[in-house]
Length: 79
Image (cartoon, rainbow, N blue to C red):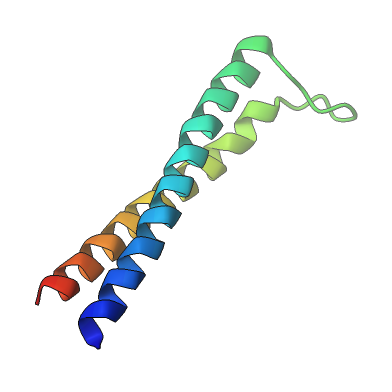
């Protein structure tokens, strides 16, 4: 029924949330290291860490969306 569907969706959302949170954590760590070491692109010599200014907020939004979807499915399973 609908309750089982919500539970299964919540399990999938939880797995997706954990993966997205892990990626966000590692991307933050990687960006800090690239900034600290001053890593640059080979040809243009642009700092690599600046590209993370777009990536990190997008990943944070993904984590928030996964969390909201997970909570929605948990509430649906309880109803």
